[in-house]
Amino acid sequence: MGIDNQFLLIFSSGLFVALAASFLGAFVVAKRMALVGDVLSHVALPGIGLALVFGYDPIYGAAAFLLLAAFGTWFIERKTELPPEAIIGTFFTATLALGVILVPNEELFESLFGNLFAIKPQDAAIIMAVSFIIFILTIMLSRRLTIGIVAPDLAKSAGFKPDLSYLGFLLLFALSVALGIKLIGSVLMGALTILPAVSARNFSWSLKSFLSFSVILGLIMTGAGIFISNYFNFPPGPTVILTGIIFFVISLLFKK
Image (spheres, rainbow, N blue to C red):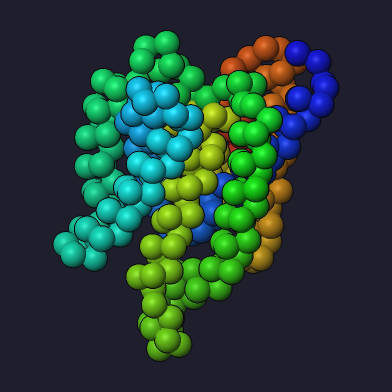
């Protein structure tokens, strides 16, 4: 596939997904929720299956199930005080089983590992617009999230409502995962969120540099992965993630 207008549109949509995911991923790593984020991405499978059964775009079914899972995790955690990884793990096993039943075999590989080159122009436009909105909302929420991570008691005394900030964070994260389904797939989308952040953490010296490097690395690894997959005709999802792994290994050389 040559580099034409269609490819540039696809490339741009991939970068916008990375922009939202890598910025959110910095807070996922800071809150020690990396495994939670990875497992949450698998919850999209039954939504994808139901959307395909009823003839809708899989991204809408994925978004519905992910948002429901995010709200359910927040609600159950408040009511039971169970750790989020236990709640998400329960959602994961149930939805994975349901997803395997619902997703047609011919669509299963694309749902699991993505196919960016199957995105239509209108899909790309929606993905870019929503990704940018997620990025802006995360910036607006970042101060509350930061204080909630560093000093929860201070957040309460300042009048913040950590529960609502946490819910907003989960919903934004779920939505960013849904947008990345076609790029990376439900199995690997969690890695796109986590890899830029863990790489950035190895050579960051402050919270601001950590957030900035996470976004920069997310954009670079995604862009490079898409170019490589296009040139060698590799599946884009695994190629982007393997590119991110290379960046992570390189970042270990700079760890202080």
